[in-house]
Length: 277
Image (cartoon, rainbow, N blue to C red; front, top):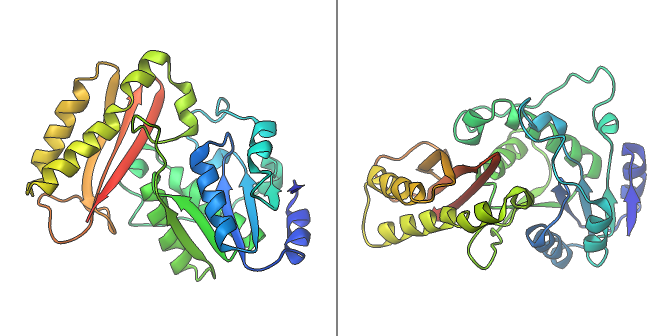
């Protein structure tokens, strides 16, 4: 497994990499959810590239960029059996002096995570575009847990005619239903005990829907009521929206619905979602 730290080095390595190339962008501090993406990339491609880059431009001024968990040696050990190349650029390598070019996707970024985290998706879209240009993959793999991010990247890829396939992979969960996330390490034991309430609320929504409930606001209220029973949970948003446009539903129709939420436990912000279809 090669570890590359410069754009020039990655481009040179890419010329020698067997096609097709699967790519998994990450911010490091890997867990089994990340590994599942890399394993699928290995199954479907001759070569696999993984990036590890904690992207400063997608963090707000009061967010956790400086404290975001990092453990490079552990990450590399986890990737060794599955990845051919790991691209680990520095901040300066990705954003050199006087850098001032940005990619913005309108329409899908004004609600949910975009409303809660202004500027977040500009940073995501920009760094992902740069990584696509540097690595030039055949297929790129993202987890469904970041559902809005996945939609934004698919839209950006289509609009900019980027020649690759975006592959969505299922959310990986802990035995109690909590979606795997690097930020789970921030949780105290008490918060970790309460965190599965997110998946419980999503499961409640699926159960109500499967039994014929079509009033989206009634389902939101039931989810809200359940989460508020957990004293450490602070709801940021609960959404039941069109899974393609993210427009909120008042009444569930014959379209896939994305049920998503963000909930804070202390300073730790967790997101999760399911799709009803």
